[in-house]
Image (cartoon, rainbow, N blue to C red):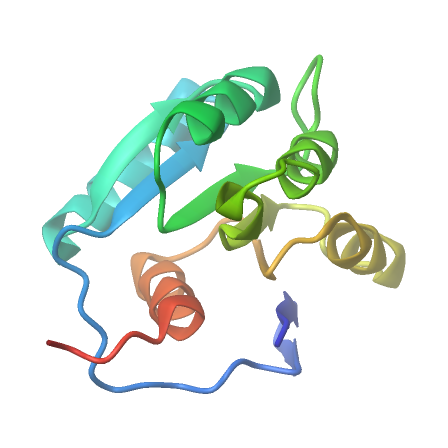
Length: 149
């Protein structure tokens, strides 16, 4: 159940559930750009998402280990520990935190190699930057696909 997007082309989109509950959903946004981090926060909070922020892959890994997240938004290209490396480290955890959905964010999802690399690392979906609030929330809702209580 992978939902990778490349430009306007969509590949193997996850099923849509119209009744997704967003209130209380915990999102970890990982991005080395402060401006991009704040933009993700501004886009998601009005939809009821609780957003935590990490500036790099190492911090993201530590936060996933110490907390519970419903979804992680992961920049692919970051210094020290890339989004790919952080995703692989999260997938290697020995508890259910390893299963957290991870959405890759990158301006470089314009070639098949980038998409294959993200998928091989264990990313649940990928979105090309810049991403709109609508596309971002739609992708999260598709991944979570939780019926409202």
